[in-house]
Length: 160
Image (tube, rainbow, N blue to C red; front, side, top):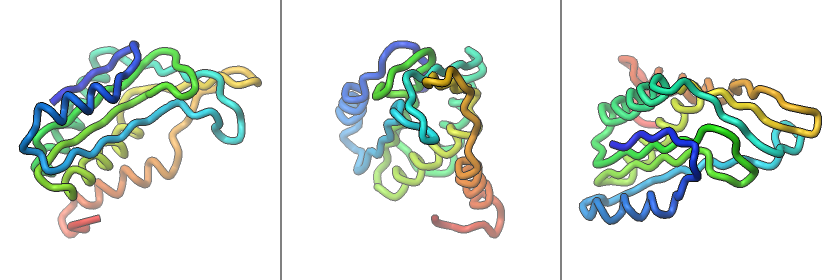
């Protein structure tokens, strides 16, 4: 397990390469890379600033990692998240999951991102031509998170 919150640039290629080389028994590694987009809600974005609570954020991400491991048979989980100011095109988050089989790796990676988007204590501020604005959580992100809650309840869907 690796959970890292950092202000320096993410090297997703090195992270993925290191994971691959350390797990020859893995049949699947699924990764997600989130980056600063150039447009949001029709406005050009110049920079994105992410704030967090040191210590609390890492504990929150570690809990998500533990929950994913409880749900699926995983060989490794990597969560690396940037904080601070980032330019368009820079990586914000890298999540990778390794398992023996692809279905578990895909499901766990999707679960982690759905949870991370809604429950991790990060606050986003975009800089636009009109000034700065805080980015609110989207309804669709919350719906994605709730889907996993329903799945964990007795009588919930077995597979998505």
